[in-house]
Length: 234
Image (tube, rainbow, N blue to C red; front, side, top):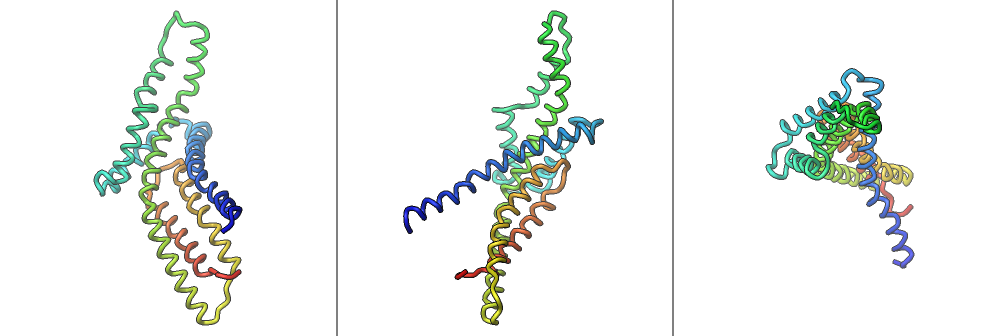
């Protein structure tokens, strides 16, 4: 393989490495944005309580169904992620301090301080909602991370099924389709990314199995289609 070919291969691989953290960052901002829009137009009466209830429901899913595995369970990983957020980032006490300071009455405060308090008071529900949404994101990400072995297993089954169908087609004189192979191959990563983004950004609680299992099946079907339509010489 020439040096130029090696370079081109490296360039093609680089976006995949960069894409993962970008997808996660985009999902965080997208989920917070959806929650804020919901507070503005849909669940105005609930305010940040909507995000809080969603966070509690996600925690219950983890606690009830994903504690198996001891220290290496999604529940324990989520607890570790949340504890790191609370220790090195933002925690409930920080939010309470902001809320107490905003609502405090200090006659000696300057005009600038009063304006700052008014601004924070208007944004307080959005700040709390963002904090709860971030915790929900970490819990959902923990579940997705631990679902990867299941996705890989489904994908392996899809590949085997596709290769078997390919051999049957070859020996029976069937026609091959390079277009079908390339199309299904290109859709594999976007389908995985889409299922992750949708689940991480959902503005309501849903059991992870209703996202993970259909996503794994869709990925397996794409692998099966790609392997079944594979052409060595195009």
